[in-house]
Image (cartoon, rainbow, N blue to C red; front, side):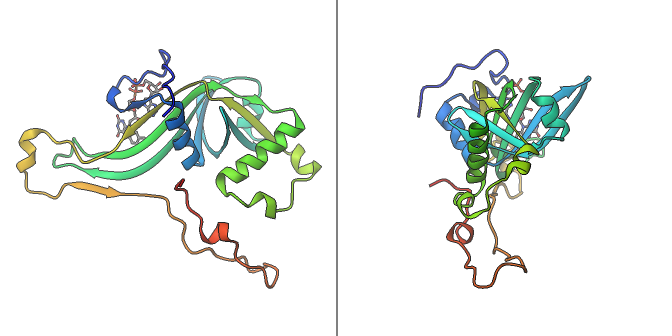
Length: 220
Ligand SMILES: Cc1cc2nc3c(=O)[nH]c(=O)nc-3n(C[C@H](O)[C@H](O)[C@H](O)COP(=O)(O)OP(=O)(O)OC[C@H]3O[C@@H](n4cnc5c(N)ncnc54)[C@H](O)[C@@H]3O)c2cc1C
């Protein structure tokens, strides 16, 4: 584990502070296992929260999308964002309804997104976004052409102000409820890849790549 980065007044976990994690490496582990984030921002006093994919390079998060999308058009002007990533690990069934919970690992990053203008960094960000989601895929795909690169915006969010919150383990009931006659425990949940479905127009003789057949989000 790396040294915890002290939280700011905005990222100090207040509710259930024992679940807070401020260790940078632990946060990167959560970010690297997930690939779906929710980006929150305010436009004309209306909050929007947009689900999208991301990639990470060291202490920057990269988000990409259509240059025409509202999120990317406005985020590059430097408005503040809140990016959250959630890994759901289980449903926690307590004896009381009140104490039901979920096991999870979640990260919140506060910052300002800026557009990546440098074409080398932009292409590299797209590569790592692709590799973050599906390692091995970039090298086996047709690379983006000029038109496609122009139609794509990439944003960089520095991972400087962040927090994680982690809940793991069994239900925590009120002491007097442990005698209550009902099943209690955890239903573990995870993202699993099912059998790949080949496209009907695959060129004949193309073999199923190992990075597809062995796909997993678990980091070894
Ligand atoms: C899958 C899942 C299910 C949840 N279900 C519930 C629910 O049903 N009810 C409920 O009240 N809460 C639930 N939570 C917890 C919820 O995310 C908040 O932590 C909680 O509601 C307290 O919010 P707050 O703004 O009062 O937190 P505060 O503690 O006041 O927030 C202060 C700072 O702590 C950090 N922080 C807070 N929450 C998180 C987080 N989840 N991840 C990373 N950093 C965080 C942020 O930096 C935030 O700015 C759930 C979380 C997950 C991931």
